[in-house]
Image (cartoon, rainbow, N blue to C red):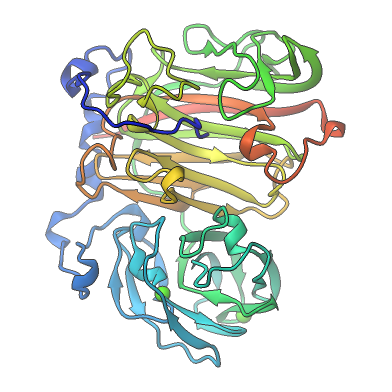
Length: 476
Ligand SMILES: [Ca+2]
Ligand SMILES: [Ca+2]
């Protein structure tokens, strides 16, 4: 969720609460979670990159585990900020190599500076098994949306159809686009990745192939709601946002606390959107959050949910800072900062989106971080997406985040697909050093929900259903 607040004048501010005083306000003491990083980073393994133009250090992360192939297509060896050692391109292919400069939207721009262009069929030898495939792209030419369209087949199944890199990156060239395709079964000893142009030639900038495996980190549950009761959400864990339409993101619904919109029944939280005139809006829905009742700094959050399909829907499972003014410079406690363009609480204090989905783009789940350094207005937003085929609205899936002092990792059904590193550039790029809380909502329309066309009024009512929310710390 973006609050579409644009920064105007950046001013020095006063609200610098330190971490310790903040911690004392926590309802749940996540005391040992701060040790999270010690289990995830082996500082002895840090080595200098072979590429001084993109100087970085090697970090072992959960994201660099179980990699079978990581290839910098069109380019040279590279050690990513994600901890992955990418091999130079020695692919045998008729496609042509190309390079570009000025890549935006990634912590590893080097990967996107080199690419291959042209129809290509890339065979990668592998043991038979189940794999997750991540492909990285950045449109090298300044084309209009829909001018380059291509299909991607993996093991002869078409997984991405008419991929439009420009459209997926809001009409911006040289902007990093990551797509993960999970659960690819290889049973002939070769993983085949085939790109076929429909309009102009396909391009490809990097490949990651990861063996499917279950996570092994030992987590301890510290906060949860299993929704094993009936009625309103537990008031000891959740608050309602009761908001008019258009308060944030130009969303079309009003959020209410009525049972019709938000209730727990049959073991799940139901947030249900209706097409109805209410409080000067055309639609109603719900939005709840755990601020002051379930705030956490570092650890893991896992949410099992079923999200609705349908054009105009924009369900989200996400996190905002519990002290929104931690890094604000133009506003402070007492200000209503959400939807307030005069206040820079957003994006300064940060936002983490564990799951976002917009109905007009039916196959993609998105994970994103927002902060002052890299937000959408300056074309630098850090995000990645996972292609889930036709699974939306079919069954419950798990959406999770692992968050430590040095990185954020977002996963879908334990397939990691978005990694964001703390590169030590200060709060502007890493405001994720203070407690956040969970938000669950089902927006209708809004700037993004309507981006693919008008809301389809035939879909209502639609539901976001949540089976559980579980928050963990590392078990030390
Ligand atoms: Ca490349
Ligand atoms: Ca094959």
